[in-house]
Length: 268
Image (cartoon, rainbow, N blue to C red; front, side):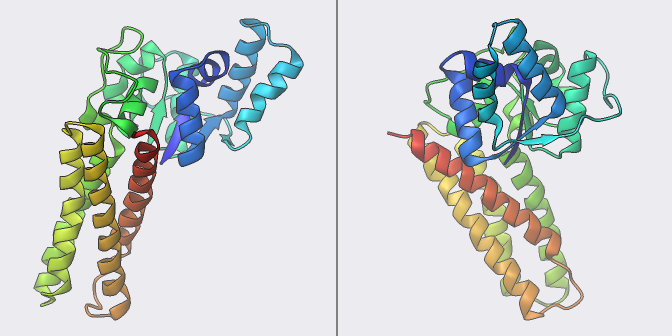
């Protein structure tokens, strides 16, 4: 998963133990972390001006960002209004980087989350999405007074798997019209099963139940990649291009693998 971290998340990870420090560790180990140059500059300024960080301390803090991709600042302002200028530029940078989720503790951005062009979640919600249920970060009504962002909106896995199921149904219909009745049925079953298991995981009764359902979803995603590769390389149906579905399936495999690994590490 590609994750954009806001300045406040990085600062909290450095100055205190707990949620944001765990989040940064998890993000760096299991995901692709992205920030903008503005975030790095703000990070240094806040540590220096608000917390009195000396240059050696600042250099040590910046070492945490060695594996982070730093993008250039956008030249244009936000496509959606209602945010302060710096928040607008951060949101624009995250959108341009095509991240799966932007993690922030900023009240204004979280309050506007449902109206923004990408998934925006609080640090607590991000960890819940990777480790629910039963983790050490219990659900709260909202971060910094903001409303809780709905799971439907904030879960990349749920949204991507649902969109993928729709794409697989369309492909199945086209394959049936081309008299391909064997692989198409296998593909329909495994391709739609990914999202079904993710939906069940969202209502899991325990962390182990969540892990079990997400593991099945991951296996179904890998099986779907197999059927799509067979279709792509066997030339059974020469007038259909399945590359789009193959790319989507591979993206789901990467996302689900990361979620399963993270959950396993935190499951006793």
